Structure formats: C-alpha cells, structure tokens
Amino acid sequence: MKSLVVSVLAIGALVAFVAPHGQKPAPPSPAEAQGATPPHLAVATAPASFGGEMELKREADGHFYATVEVGGGDYRMLVDTGATVIALTGDDARNMGLDWDPNALAPVARGASGPVMGVPVTIDAITIGDFEARDVQAVIVPEGLGVSLLGQSFLSHVPKVDISGDKLTLSD
Image (cartoon, rainbow, N blue to C red):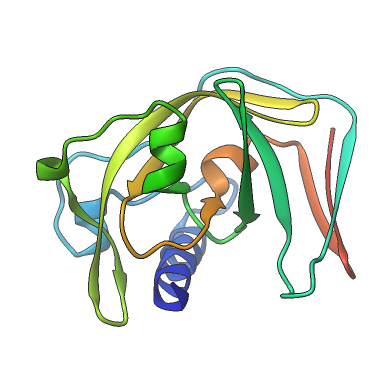
C-alpha cells in the first residue's frame, strides 16, 4: 500500500509541477503515467455545491480521514491531497454499486513492485458534510489498496483546503 500511495502522490506532484502558472493541471491518464499517450482521464467539471466549513483532526497514524457519502452509504477515506483522483478499494467500489470488468484492468499508477492495476470510473455524487461534487472521476484498484483515497478529483472543487497543525479544514 505504501508504494501505491507514493506512486499516486508522485503522479499528483508531477502534474502540479509541470502545469503552466495559473492553470489547473489535467491529471495524467493511466497510460500517460507509464509514458504512453492514449486518451486523457479528465477531472470532472460538473457543478459542485459547497457550504460552510468542515474540520478533520489528524489521527494517530498521522493521516486525515473523512467519512464520505456515496449512493446513500458512508465510507471512510484517507484524504490524499497528492492523489490526482479518488482511488477506491474493490470492496468500497462494489458497496457503492460501481461495477467493473476484471478484463478492463489497466495500469493506473506505478508502484515500487511495478504497475498498479485499476479501472477508471465516474462517481455520480460524493458528499462530505455540506460539500458535494457530481460526476467525479475515480479509479477502482481491486487489489493492493487497504483504504480508499480521497484525491484531487474531489478536493479541487473545494474552494479552500487548509492544513494547519493537526487540523485539515474544508471551507468556502
């Protein structure tokens, strides 16, 4: 799992580093993450609705976790500001009602032991407190991911994400 998180963080950092100043970077497609140039996996541009402020406290393992709602169910995700998209465990994806064809697995990131296999999907709506985004891009990683990751495909729609000490705050 550590190598997957490092890979996802590295992809996010690379995209942020090479984007022209003042422009939001487009996330790499799974193939681009490996150096090829097939179609882009785009961050959702659908409207989002946000309100208020939400504070998350750093947990004992040093990470921030959020309870998100998808399709009427609640799911615990690790907040990963360096991840380009949401990465879902196979169990979370299945419980969310997201289906995938195992034959459609393709490299979505590169870990220390090689390619990380996954399937791109779109989450219709995801809510954290009063913050909601629609048509959000994600990848299902059926094996090797211990917890789902809440990445920039959701977080980039929040007007303000601030980490200060042991608090992560989402706000307007």
